[in-house]
Length: 167
Image (cartoon, rainbow, N blue to C red; front, side, top):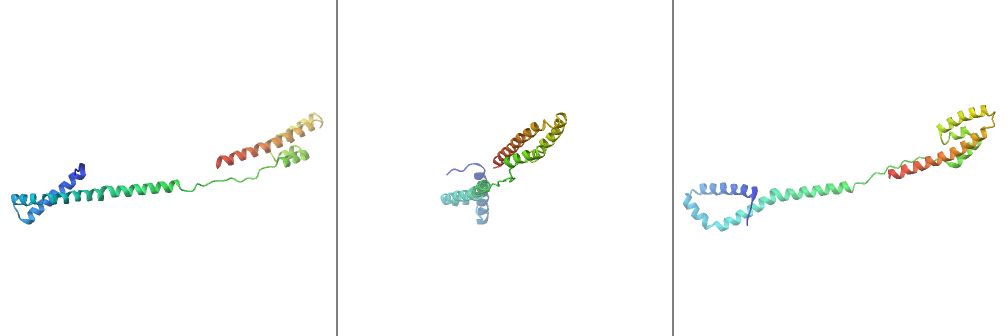
């Protein structure tokens, strides 16, 4: 078995110091220890290799495996998180009601569908009514009816488009 890199060097240092400590504890000379060491060399080599493998798994592979497991678990939780859907609920305006209000009240009925349009048509109605002695108000009335229906339909389409864009 071949072992390379920092793991091999670190375990090698540990092994050397352990062997040295063993020689000192046994109170053997260097030559006596070498002789006994060579007799047990094969057994010690197996122990050494097992130690290297155990240290490698304990210090590197097992923590890395736990790290990967936790990372994937976090990624799964993030991808499975429920999405919040915000639905804006607002009442659509009725084109029929806009038609009836402007038919009955002219520019004042236009205020239901378009406030700015209603104010503008009230001012236009006063001016045109004054200039034409009231005969031009029929055209203002018809313009208000058309404007009201178009404005309500436009607002409803815009609201529907915004609602589908938010989903």
